Structure formats: C-alpha cells, structure tokens
Image (cartoon, helix red, strand yellow):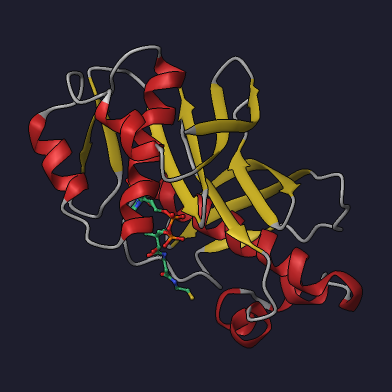
Length: 213
Ligand SMILES: CC(C)(COP(=O)(O)OP(=O)(O)OC[C@H]1O[C@@H](n2cnc3c(N)ncnc32)[C@H](O)[C@@H]1OP(=O)(O)O)[C@@H](O)C(=O)NCCC(=O)NCCS
C-alpha cells in the first residue's frame, strides 16, 4: 500500500513522496483497467522485485495526484511524458520511497538516501565552489543534496550529454536541517537557464525538486 509522507504545491507544481510496501502490487492491479496493457506488460516485465514495485508505486501515486489515469510515454533519452495532460512530469525512487513531481512549467525531482559512499565520488559531480561550500560536519547530507539537485536538473533537461561539474551548476548554499531554497542553472555553450530548487530531509532521505513559483 502507498502512504503519502510528503506533499507540497504552488500554482504550478505538485510534489508528493510516498512510501510503499509489497501490497503495492495489489494496488497496481486495481489500476489495470486504467493503464494500457502495453504499459502494464512493460512494468511487470522487470524481474527485479524492488524496481518493479518502485515503478508501480510511481504510477499509483501519479494517478492519485491526477485523480485519473495518466498514460506515460518516454522520449528517446528516457524522459517521461504524460499523454493528454499539459503537464511536465518527473519521477524518482529510492528503496521503498517514490517521488513524483507534476508541473505546468518544468519538472525535475530526485530522492536519495544519505550514505557515506558519496565521499568517494563527490569530485566527479561537484565543481570547486560547490565543494568548498560543504562543511565537514554535514558533508554527506550536503553533498547528497547537491547530487539530488544535479539529477533533478538533468531530468528537467531530459537529454543526455550534460557534464555534471560544468553544465549543471549550483549556486553554493549553506545547509540547514530544516531544508530550504537554492538556485541552480543548466549552462550550455550558448545558453544558461536558471532554476529555483527546494530541498527537504525526510528521515535518511534527501529530496530535491524544482520550484516554479
Ligand atoms: C536517468 C537518471 C537521472 C535516473 O536517476 P536514478 O537516480 O538512477 O533513478 P531515479 O529513481 O531517481 O529516477 C528514475 C526516473 O528517471 C526518469 N528518467 C530517466 N531518464 C530520464 C531523462 N533522460 N530525463 C528525465 N527523466 C529521466 C524516469 O522517469 C525514471 O523513472 P521511471 O522509470 O519510473 O519512469 C540517472 O540514471 C542518470 O543517468 N544520471 C546521469 C548520470 C551522469 O551523467 N552522471 C555524470 C556525472 S557523475
């Protein structure tokens, strides 16, 4: 079953996170009349149990937010698109959590658990000013928020070939446990697009989403 643990919205965006258990498979079965048989076959074909459940939970949460069935298609890079709704959409999953963002403008969301492992890879995705803004006491959490922000912007852009250190740039910010707002940009050779992002901690998870207020 799904259980919404976080929900927020503004005039353009709706964001929700739910936790789910193995009963999500039953709940998903209840949607079978609404979702196309091709989509059902695709989702059920994942042999990794948790991955399959994560995708199912995403669909259950999406339909819950829309109040009706949303048919999802993917572009050639894997970016999800909702057919017949003028909304941008973004999904993220981690362990037993799934996050969905719907936006009248642009959607990008990411949820990750906070792990010590991030230390080993931090130089691969953070540039010098971003790295310098992280204090030792809150290193893993702060670095995970940066990572989520870059993944959320990557999903908003929706195409491959973005270098995380150079093309996705976050304005260095101070971490506070209550969460907050910060800024990020997608910087390409001839363009720069700026975004406002929000972060929030829910237990061991960091959540970051674009905020199009
Ligand atoms: C695609 C990617 C963003 C997914 O992130 P993840 O942390 O593995 O997984 P998440 O659960 O957060 O997100 C999965 C969702 O991403 C979405 N997604 C996949 N490709 C996408 C794309 N090109 N654009 C937008 N969204 C995309 C899908 O909706 C998917 O959920 P679904 O299968 O249920 O529909 C990630 O695998 C990736 O490729 N990141 C870029 C890595 C990179 O270039 N790193 C270089 C610096 S180290």
